[in-house]
Length: 312
Image (cartoon, rainbow, N blue to C red):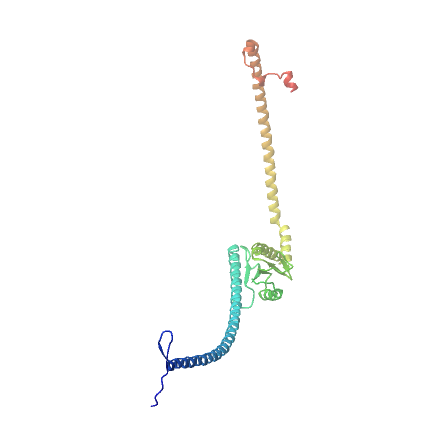
């Protein structure tokens, strides 16, 4: 082994011996560490850059995936909202249908209220009008609508339902009226109203159906009825009934005249009696007054009225 010469110097101030090789060693070590640190920093910077780029690429992909997921979820949410709104509107329509049926059943217990089965073709509710004396006077059909806007196509479809049911009147109960109709009214032969207006309109329409049915009934067999009436008016039975009525009135008139004469006789007799009593009372009062003078209290009914009273 080669012997390394160790160089030493003495510090002039503190007289301390300094090993130069050791100093050089430490300097070299520091330079090597510095260079290694610089290289390490470069490597770290490069790695950070690579990692940042990789993360950026990964994040971009993830963001794209996230955006795609968000768009897909938005579509699903919109579809769910549409189904919910459609279901809600359908539920609201069914609620109004039930309310119409319940009101008709409660208001007209003699009528037949038929609900059209869900999914079946036709209107929502059919009312067969009955009275105590006549069955099936007519048919009123009701259609319920609860949407955000009024559709004119409803009317034509509803008219087809009316013809299918053989109905007399059709009523379209809607939450939203046509733009040119502020209140209930008739359009193309169909009555259009809100649910509140329906409660009064159904009463009027039912009465109209009954009156129309009665008019038709009266026209049936009109010729035969006129012939029967003529035969009855010219029959002996009708003559005897009229004679009996006249005899009854004649007897009543005779009894009334007799009663009047009897009462007049009684009234005249009573008048004479009252006049006699009153005259005797006046004479008695006058005699007593003449004897006793002013000591007797005055009876105004038996005294003559004074000048002032006559003036009054």
